[in-house]
Amino acid sequence: MTQLELQYLLNKAKKGNAKAQLKVYDAYCDAMYAVAYRYCKRSALAEEALQDAFLKAFTKLEHFHHQSSFGAWLRKIVIHTALDLLRKEKKYCFTLEEQELQQQAAPDIWEVPDRVQKQEIVEAVASLDEKYQLVLQLYLFEGYDQGEIAQIMQIPIRTVKTRFRRGRLQVQELLKKQYETN
Image 1: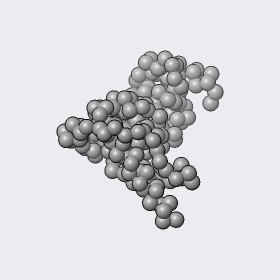
Image 2 (image 1 turned 135 degrees about the horizontal axis):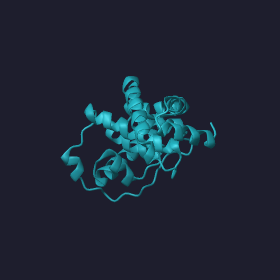
Image 3 (image 1 turned 60 degrees about the horizontal axis):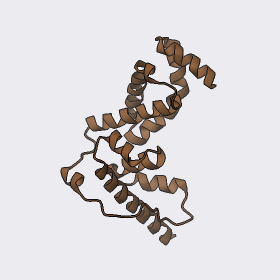
Image 4 (image 1 turned 90 degrees about the horizontal axis):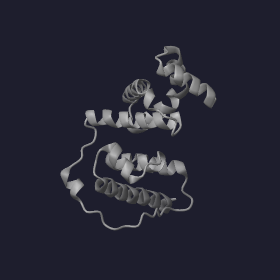
């Protein structure tokens, strides 16, 4: 779909045109389902997040001002919706102890063997505890900075930094062990 076609469909969708909304949905549903599934880890929950996200997007189309691509705008809505559903299911908990931990000064350096492939990093991140996994996914795969992650997850930035550092160290250790045994 060209940018001009998308713009035309979005203008019609803003006015409540169901056919235009369906075409936009069809164009983006597969990619957005993949984003939702990355966070929800269950097909039914990812589908629920997808449906809720599209509903939110279509009811708030007037807030989309083309400062970014429609896909990027929609992806943010999908991520927020997926995380909201996880919160409702109490899939992850934020403890007071963790929020109060002081982050030790550590360089933000990824020390992994040169032969590491992207899929190996994806698998290593997927094997982490969910609280570390979510932070690393948002940072590595979605491109959010730590401040944005704190806002998305609605937790203090110190907690994000701690989870990021711990998750990064665990991924590095997993990858080092994998290459030591091979």
